[in-house]
Length: 282
Ligand SMILES: NC(=O)c1ccc[n+]([C@@H]2O[C@H](COP(=O)([O-])OP(=O)(O)OC[C@H]3O[C@@H](n4cnc5c(N)ncnc54)[C@H](OP(=O)(O)O)[C@@H]3O)[C@@H](O)[C@H]2O)c1
Image (tube, rainbow, N blue to C red; front, side, top):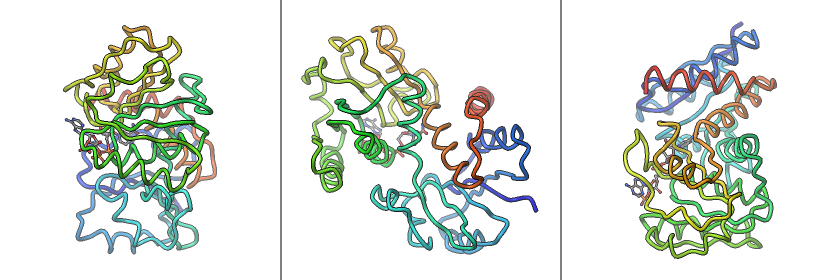
């Protein structure tokens, strides 16, 4: 019996996850298929009931359901529960268990692509939305020393800071206003991450001076369309190491794939599939 995997969200035009996971399935020659499930909010509960069937092995969850799906699941992994969002569901003998692979995928891709090890490091994270939460959690879990959160809406940065303090009381986090980023001591920052949608489709840039950093500072952007955002382009010109958003997409997908199939997927092939799909549709 062919086992079904997929992605649940709305709207879902040209999801990059479909070609990405199908490339891994074809390469490994395993009997799975990965499909797109564009589900209206009023149908989510019914859809989840259908997903308990034996042949549906698991699925990813994306905007706008990462939090909304949680009450419909039978159990939630401890880590996803702490983050408060689920991006992966695994069908474990008819019982649906929710996981979150976004943050761990981010940290793994950062390590693989730039050699960055979060242990003892200071991070400036721009943005305090859903993706930021998972990224911050995983960086602290991986041993980061401090996270400074800068966000347009200061209350949201403050709420994330307080949430992090609950789970990581020994490490420090801090929330600042977006306009105060340039006043920070850049020499002390080892990693700068954009987790906002600024720079998507090449529109807009982060209002941040990229001078005064140590030469081993990494500048990372989780926006993957375009792969080189205006922010990353400036970072490269400033001589800093850069890390693009396709990395997080591929590695969170690889972590989900391992959960469903028990097999390590070919990440290089998945990345090539993402880059091809970006050229074709985005
Ligand atoms: N690479 C990957 O695998 C991956 C995974 C997930 C998400 N992403 C990308 O990450 C981005 C954020 O996703 P999300 O799910 O976290 O979204 P979200 O929960 O809606 O959060 C959006 C964030 O962007 C900020 N923002 C939006 N427009 C802004 C502007 N014009 N000026 C300043 N700040 C602005 C928001 O600030 P306020 O709080 O002030 O509104 C908030 O911090 C998207 O581009 C998404 O495609 C990539």
